[in-house]
Image (cartoon, rainbow, N blue to C red; front, top):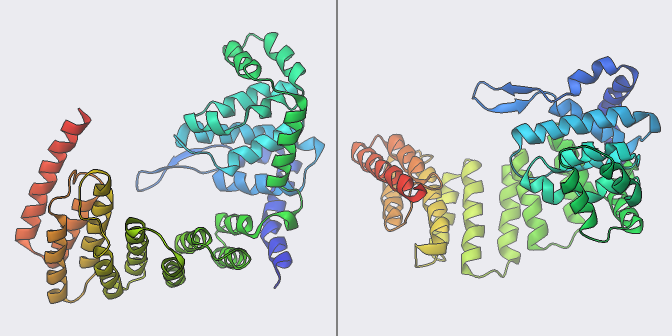
Length: 377
């Protein structure tokens, strides 16, 4: 099956969802932001997947009569970000905003302003030009005539620089290139993320692997491929790519330590405790001598990984040897309340049923908790 067929297959269900939303506004509540608490206590948005599906289909099938639906989707994305996304900005909100902005209606200024002001990151990343696609002069007139509580703030943003209609047009062209209306113009990397969002692991792997095959085999390309494969659960493949990262990298020792630590983590997650420990021994040889200051975080992550491998070591004698080595590495590292290192130490001690180690790490955790309170104070 070629990529054209695969794209068509992946778009089939979103297209059907879009047609249902177009036929019946009564179906829109299924796309709405709806907070729900999972059994584990995490809050999720039950409408997120359905809303993403329709929004994605709208990118490739744009019609003038969809403005009402687009406004609704942008409102729901804004609510999602306001309630559940304290930082960060992804393409879900910016795509919804762009598709509304393409209609160039000045009355949507307030909708865009609300999206822009949900968090610090959206304030920076959701471009002011969303508000100006109906024309800079028209936007100024609309805001000046309003009684909106943020009227003066918006006017200050619009007038602080010499924004022009030509600049807004250039921005719109950039957004059209970023969100093409033709599925074939979307990058394979983007399709990999689309497929992952639909739970299509194998399709996502194929798209990302094909994308990487067409790129220079640099450390950046390989890191992107490795992290995507790992998120999808293709851990042996991620291990192989991370080995390639190490082969092509000419990074200094501390960066090499980080790359080795990543390899060890992937090996552990893939169930290869022995290989992971061998990698961690290699990592120790390039770790900085100083465990304090800017290097403390690297040391905490390194020792945490050591303890996690101990907890996965089936042979009792090997596990005890590894615990002793890990415990030695732990000494001298500051702020042990950070990065979960003591939780990993306790898991290792519990795996061995070692009462002395359990007592030691519990004592360290109590002391670390007191230190944390002092640091925060």
